[in-house]
Length: 206
Image (tube, rainbow, N blue to C red):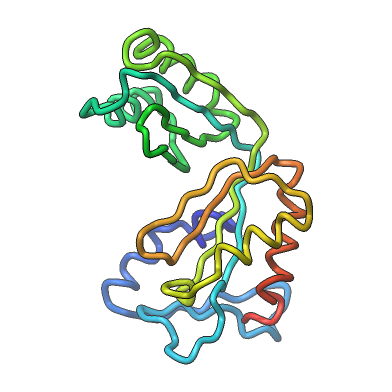
């Protein structure tokens, strides 16, 4: 939540609290009557909410890295991410197809030029055959401990955004099932987030 949401709280702020299992309550300074969100070391066993939070990172860009030489070649992803790291590019999201012939990464719009330039200079014509870029995209992330093991969450997510005629470009989910993220056009971001808030009744969530 701290990564995708408001930038007032850095993710590392939570590290000492997690170590000592100290609960933390996040309040809205513009609405003191609201109880806010209580962050604890373990989820509430009685929670009925599958999704607790929907956040977005806008003004991003998608780079599709392709190449037949990538298939079955150990260290391909490492070379790509090492190249980007040396250029000072932070990768916010990663997706790879099962054939291993392409890796899709999402970066900030402001990092796009140096990301593409570094990949072209270091790897194009070697392990990379082609780069395709899509600008002005947004990452939408759903977070919630209730998502784990719950059948139909993804169906509800993509059903809700489909009703708003929003096209999903890339999807990724961790094995923990606590987090689901996908990419849409930046212009569709607000519509998609609102649809998800309505679908999971997040206005009722403290």
